[in-house]
Length: 411
Length: 73
Image 1 (cartoon, chains in turn red, blue):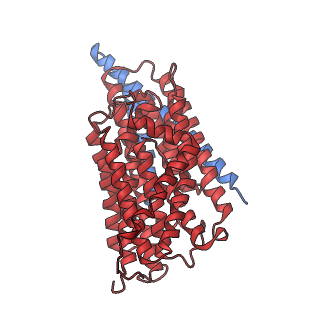
Image 2 (cartoon, each protein chain N blue to C red; image 1 turned 90 degrees about the horizontal axis):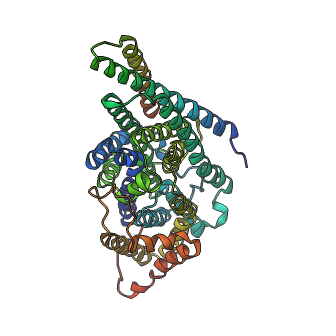
Image 3 (cartoon, helix red, strand yellow; image 1 turned 45 degrees about the vertical axis):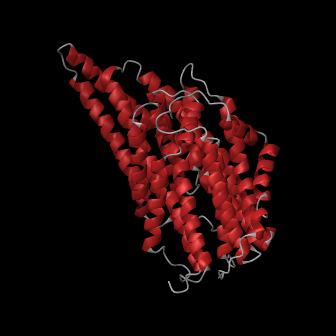
């Protein structure tokens, strides 16, 4: 690790920060249904999910390099580009968490990567075909597939289980939900923790610290696994509330059907070579389960907000990524500026979130609080407003330019 | 641009069949257990229902095991 430059250290820390946001953003995928139906106590649920994420991170290194492959030209990727991509992805993850909307962390990361690459190497470096086949089609297919499967499964379980009641049924559905949620957690650990490992490894290769085509070093695997587990344990309670209570009201049977459908879709898709987003699959499954019960309703206003957020994920993260890459292009002070901006806006988002705390104590209260959450949601609902919000954030970049005059050498 | 419709189609088909089959099996298992519970409350026993229930749960456990195998492999 002799030539471990400052920019490389920044990229590694930022990648771990992204991993952390990825963890708490996606706790909802595995545990929202389990928590809202009361199968597990909130704290127990996130602890179990965190442990399984950590285990999952160690299971294989297969996925580790796939995130960037095919989407952008890897040749000539500099650590700054990866840094800028991560900034875009983290900010989008935090923003969607603030408004409590589930959105794909992978899409945020891809968006950031695409934006940063365009700013650095022009539009030619992005493969449009890969964008459609890897991002757009899966984003439409995942909720449909998981939703239809969950709908039919819910119908079936209500029909077959009509006479089943009492303790046996209660225990049974509880066990079923825990098992399928565990599978989703494990799959998430292998997929998403490895994406971060892939990013860090890519940065190390780009920075010349690792030889090309190396496997991720042990410290990368360990720190990525720990970061995602910690994030998962802290729990994105806002998103859990939306997923478990906001979209529809779930009974144990529905929770079981939804989570089984999501687990099956995630495993089948990654195994059959048409990777689908965990977030999209779970959201679709929850809605399908909502429609499958007689008298069940899906709150389409919440669902619509979620769909809008999905649509915005890629462009918004790309925009921030591109701006960040543009600013880092000015050299060391530019990179420092982006780093300061990232920390400052993360702190700001956290501060705003404290005004309306959602945690394990009130995660199952379905009434949506007015105030900051609603206003912030309104900002995301309308696409133009959403993009101005992002621009406003971005526009603050040049402000503190006079004060930091860092002398650190870059690369 | 080449969209892999075959892969997408098989993901759709496999997910649908496996989900419905698993949930169906598990529900049958639960129904079996529930029947046994009722029977034992009345002093009789429902051995067939109980055996069927365990068979269903075993099949589900096997599916979960296969899922873990897919994650690890």
